[in-house]
Amino acid sequence: MSRKWKIISVLALVLIALQLLRPSIPNKPATAEIQAPPEVKQVLEKGCYSCHSDQAKLAWFDQVVPAYWLVRHDVLTAREHLDFSTLGAKPAAVQKAKLYEAVNMIQLGAMPLPQFAALHPEARLTADDVATLKAYLHPWGALPVQAEAPGSSSAVHGFAPLAAVAPALNGVAFEPAFPEWGLVSITDRGDNNTFRFVLGNDVAMQAIASGKITPWPDGTKFAKVAWKKQLGADGIVRPGDYAQVEFMIKDAGRYKSTDGWGWARWVGPDWKPYGANAEFVNECTGCHQPVRRNDFVYTLPITASHVDGAEIVNNRAALPAGLPYQPLGWRPVTEYVDPKTLTTAALFGNDEAMRAVKAWNASGRSGTPAYGAGSVLALVTWAQRDDPHWFGARVPDLPRTVEFLSIGARGSPDAYRRFAGSGLNEEHVDAQASLPREGWMRGLTPVELPR
Image 1 (cartoon, rainbow, N blue to C red):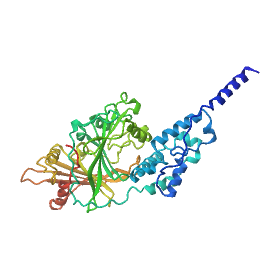
Image 2 (image 1 turned 90 degrees about the horizontal axis):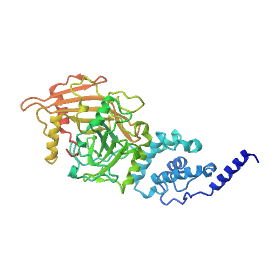
Image 3 (image 1 turned 120 degrees about the horizontal axis):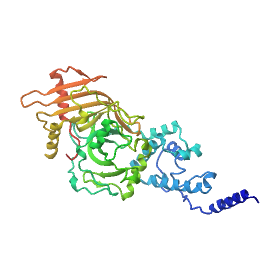
Image 4 (image 1 turned 90 degrees about the vertical axis):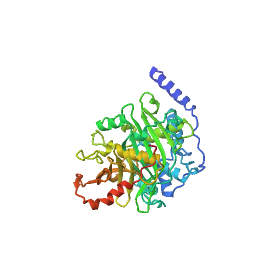
């Protein structure tokens, strides 16, 4: 026998011997399968169940070692993150949240895994399949009308002291300065009925202003602050009860094992660390994998700076330089959505206005802040568009109006100015006609946040 055939024979024997090293992939009947209509389950069975259920379906070539080892690893990892065979045991809201995440993984091309879909083309979901999932989730259904009168706040909590908040269960420290950070963007979430401010520290805001965010520099810190949505009798949706804050902290060396970011979440006004143990971070890193090309950041910062690449920043929502003030550089006071006009608005205040907000917050949040002389409020209203990164969310689109209210000294009139249209040109507004808008801006209740 020639040397060539001896080598082939040895390799064949080794390959045959390796087939005996086959740790099992447990297959068992579903104990609590996801609760969904038949057409939805059919789509999930087609594109997801091979890995994300307790009944793995392997092709003949998946059975061959060493490919089998890779497949087994992928299946067991997939089940840890999402198992449709047991998901039905969780509350309906959790089931839908997992489906939202699945839809976003699919539409961003992260699932099914590209290497899996290449060998298993039958697992690819069509546009109609994705449409079936989206129709079932229906994120923009009607909210129940709350009892609160327009402009009033929801139940107010006393926040625990920021300086005493315990670290997250993975060791990431709390960031007590986050209420003073700048606004990166706002988000209207229909998937979980929350509003969000995405705030950034000075490093983040400087990177946004310069367009140097691919990748984000070390020292970048984000706070994603969420409030439950509250629909008033006037049809306007406002922030209600405070829900949670999530942090992303960029330190490529320290957090190398989690994509260069430190991830953390604290829930409720008592700042309870999220999760049962440090493994909660796997939820964060897994969820953000589809936007790894954007350095794992979903948010599109509102900025006029140009950044190469598709849908990395939100230039459409930026404000022109010719306005008398640049409110996006101020601190946000609150936000709201008008579902009838599909617009979202945010109220901003200059330093003097924010001092009034802090004093009002410290005094028990009764009524609305007493804005003194020198305070300037800015109400920016944008059209809304679907978030290109997250199905079930909407973000600001083109600005519709910018309104400024400068508070005069005692005995002096306030000054109201309105900018509108495609170029945000100033409109003449009669002093008497401006009074309802002035009252609207003064009467907006700040979001519940430690100040």
